[in-house]
Length: 147
Image (tube, rainbow, N blue to C red):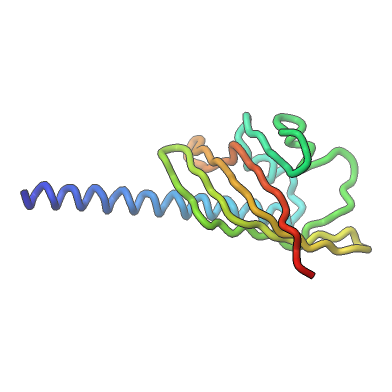
């Protein structure tokens, strides 16, 4: 009986360690997303998504494919720059090669004349593809800031 309990404890411990590793990997991807936003690397932002990803921006249709890419990297010159972007997960749950992540985001954008601070909530469904976590579904909406 002791051997079975020891094996079971080791299995549970190993599973928990694997979960922790995957959660940290997802947090690292979220941090990269923010870095790409602040550096204006919009192509890299788009590359964080799976090839069949969908985004659900507030007050807009669901976007995928070229429409998703154009949302993050619109044709022509973009006048607003993001100087601050941060994702704060509240919960990340990994289930094999898929995971969900929900929490808050915040940031600051400017067009040189005006500055806009923003904050909101999000839910992301992640997929692990070839060892890397990518965003499959991404929904967010703003929270009114108290000023």
